[in-house]
Image (cartoon, rainbow over all chains, first blue to last red; front, side, top):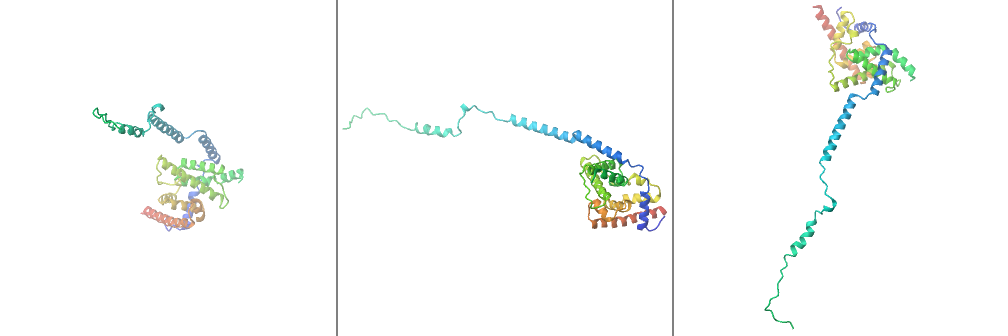
Length: 114
Length: 167
């Protein structure tokens, strides 16, 4: 059949397509049962993606923790602690005392004070 | 809605729902059944609620369409498989007897997805353009444009194929 495909002809052609019996459709009960089963299975078992995500978090977290723990600098005992500005306290004496010149008394100096 | 009533409403629409799911899944029966299962669960568990603003079957078609679209996106993200443009429409339709039917199925498959969806809803599933817009979650104006362009293109393809066939 050739000719113009007007709306009526289109509707008739679609009606022919639709007329095929729906014998190949699964039954309503089968679809609902399968849906319930799949839902129960999904709820009961963690998905692969979720398990993988948990494993990745554990590995990365553990690695970070180990890395940070090994990089901690050694802590000196409290008794050995020195202030970082301690040299300022020590430099006052060190500079002032050696600069003093001690003049010994001269033996010719007999003059007596009145 | 009462669960028993909901159940019986779903059951009464099951045949056309399955065909619509097939259309949404490019004729892949496994994907259509998966989409239909998920859509039914959404309805029965109350995750999708019928608000009575449209016919029950129109609302159900929208739920099925959204579910099929979500599952298609999920498959694309997972790289499990590509989503090819259909070589043919649902096997239920493509196996229909008659040269006209085969030509119609081929011509439909050659249309852009949105135009094909609107035409299938209007001609195959006997919805109005307004209902098609609601199912596909697009504006009525947009649906009318897809309908007009799709119908025009479908006519051209069918007439071309007839001319080729006659030579």
